[in-house]
Image (cartoon, rainbow, N blue to C red; front, top):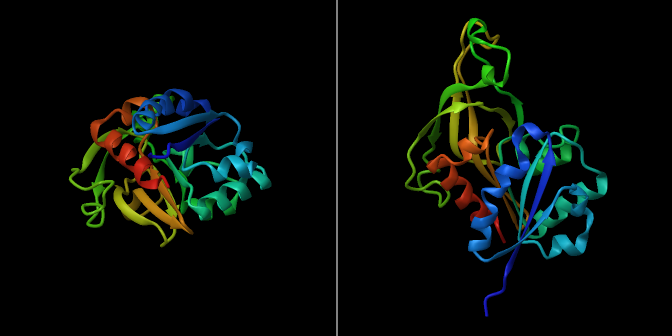
Length: 232
């Protein structure tokens, strides 16, 4: 008899990324693929070693916020032992800004999302919605998460992330160097990546500011495949 896998959805933090609505898009998918899904709004669940030992996949959507030492240690230990960790946008790449140990685990950290030209800004969140392309890398064209998918153009926040060389980059996005920003040449940033950590797998997609981006067929496919890939 096939053993049921267990997914832990941890959601909260900044409300602007709609942690409940966006994770609700993927919970039915996980259940349809045989996962028993538990939802928590407090990341202190990571400190419960019994829960984490029985968890095959953590789907985290917690933008900013903080994490305690025991919770972070529990998350790192679980991933090292084989629990998968996955998420999108600020829910995983802009979590726990004051924790270098979390940053090391995930491998990339939000730095900024560049804005429109000053004369195009209206003073709300749309000032940071830029037309940009998510480009599949050569590695991505062979990886099970992104194989067979085409580049995709989005109008949304374009994440600039700081990262290290342990990430396997499946897609990138390039920030131009317009006159109103201080950098002097285009900067290419990872947009989709994976990371091996001990026996565990980490999956990150930076698109996903809002539910409509996550419902784009290509982004939805990447996230769905990423969740399954990361799971134990």
